[in-house]
Length: 336
Ligand code: NDP
Image (cartoon, rainbow, N blue to C red; front, side):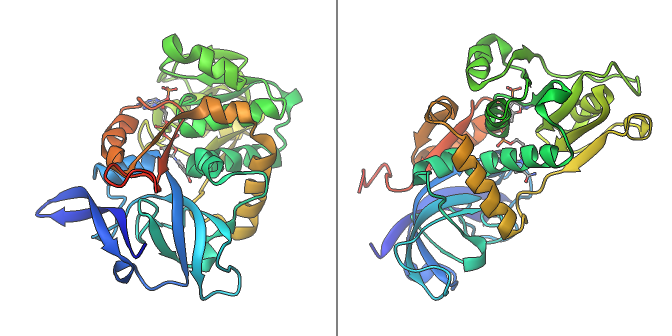
């Protein structure tokens, strides 16, 4: 296959248009490793990029898609050879460099990690950037001494991609997980099946600087008033991994949780995470994710053509768990 399908974001006047185009290998940027992409996935940031709802994309035209898994076809790097299965998340791919919503991608070798043994390519994208970020968040809590015996750990935005995987990983590791969701009416059973011990609603704003100590730790995907509320309720010496901003980029807090309770606020950046830590996180994901969890968290597998509609939905908080994008299937070509 020399020609291949890709989603292309192009700037037209002040608008950004997403279309599915047929490209040739000559259209791809000149980088070390040519990858035949099997799967990508839909993350919140992809939703922002595809709908142009935030300035995620820095250059046009752009192939979006912040993660991918596939097979090396050609390599000018000593690290990878043709036939190797590789995974990519982050490194500003899909933002500043052409990404995973294409059947082919040319990438820097340093951006890749080997597909960990124990995971299929599809499972790697059932995890994707969201699941990788969940693992990084859990690792950050562990490193701060948040152990299962310390008390309940809360996950906000629990039914989303990062949230769902966080609930599953923490439960598997023996934590007592409380899932905070705006969709408790419809998704409580789902979150309990993932391992949550109980479900609570979304957090509310308050003028109080501190509240009753409830949480030994937290994974927060929401930011803003939600993160502030979680900090007010985090127990002495507890830790909060802040990884998301679906509720907004502000943090309307006081210093009291930090100076009166020694609460730790842990920043999570999956994009520029060093390679050694990536490999370690992927190995842990391969160990911790079960077949049952993969089934539960996967809302669906979609084609390139369906990404635009789902991008609107993920921004409205309507997507449950994870959506996989199958690059080997397109509406026109059918399965190849
Ligand atoms: P999803 O859309 O899959 O999940 C977000 C969840 O947050 C929703 O499912 C919903 O869960 C909840 N939610 C949505 N809107 C609101 C709101 N206004 N107030 C409160 N809760 C809300 O997104 P992802 O899981 O892919 O990403 C989550 C966040 O993490 C994003 O901000 C993303 O940019 C960030 N992220 C950061 C990374 C990093 O490196 N730091 C990497 C990956 C993601 P429910 O219905 O259960 O309430």
